[in-house]
Image 1 (cartoon, rainbow, N blue to C red):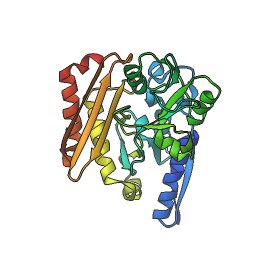
Image 2: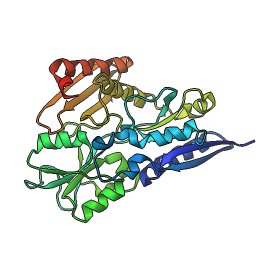
Image 3: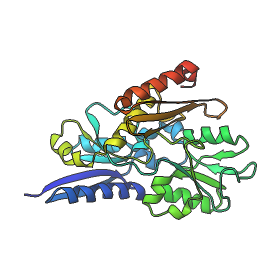
Image 4: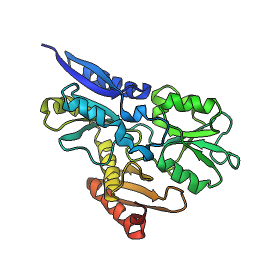
Length: 302
C-alpha cells in the first residue's frame, strides 16, 4: 500500500518551489511514496502594510504551518531557515537541513550597479531589521522604506519605482530563476547574512519516527553544523526575529569559523566579532561568540 506524506507550505512562489523540491527528492528516495503539498496562508502573508518587527516577527510565517501539523492536516513543513524563530514550540524539531545554497544577500536595482553607486538619499526597500541596521551603518544617507511581500511583489514594487534598490536573499532569486536580477552579491563583510540564510529546513513533530526516517537521507551534515552554530549564537543573545542579528558560519577541514553581529535598529551601534574553533563544538561556538558580544555591551540592544 502506498504511503502518503503531506507537506505544509506557504503559498508564495518561493515557498512552493522549496516544498516541491523536497517532495521531488523524497519521492525519488522512497519508492511508492506519494507526496502532496498543503498550501497555507499565514498571518505574515496577510499583513503586508507594516514591518514584521511591528506586528510580531517572522514567527507569523510559521504558526499556521505548525497548526496544520498539530491538527493532522500535514506531516511536515518546509521552511527557509532564516524565517524560523530561534526556539521551536515543544514537540517540534528540525528533522533535516538540506545542503546550503548561496547564503549571501543580493543587491537588486534597475538603475544602479552596487550599494556604493547609490546616490545620496536613494530609497532602499527592505522589511528586515538586520538589513536595515547594516545599510544604515554603511550608508546613513540612504532612506530606508518598508517593503513587504514575497519576492515577486518586492521586485514589482522596485520596477514601479517605489524605491531605487532592494536587498534580497541570493538563494531565493536563484531558486526562482531570477538570478539575472542580481546586480551584485554582497559579501559577508558587506552584509552579514541572516541566521540560516540559504538553508531549506524541514520541521516535523518529534514523535513521528516514521517521518524522521523518511527525512534522514536529506540531512546534509556540514550544513547542520553551520546551522547549529548560527542558531546557538542567536539563542545566546536572547534574540527575537525582530532583532538586527546576523551570523555566518564557514567550515574548514576540521574547524568552524563563525562571524556574528548585533546592532541597533538605526545602525548607529554595531557589535561584531568572529571566532574559530573545532567544528565538533558547533553549538558551543555559537554560545561563546554570543557571550563575547554580550560582554562587549550588546545585551543593552536586545
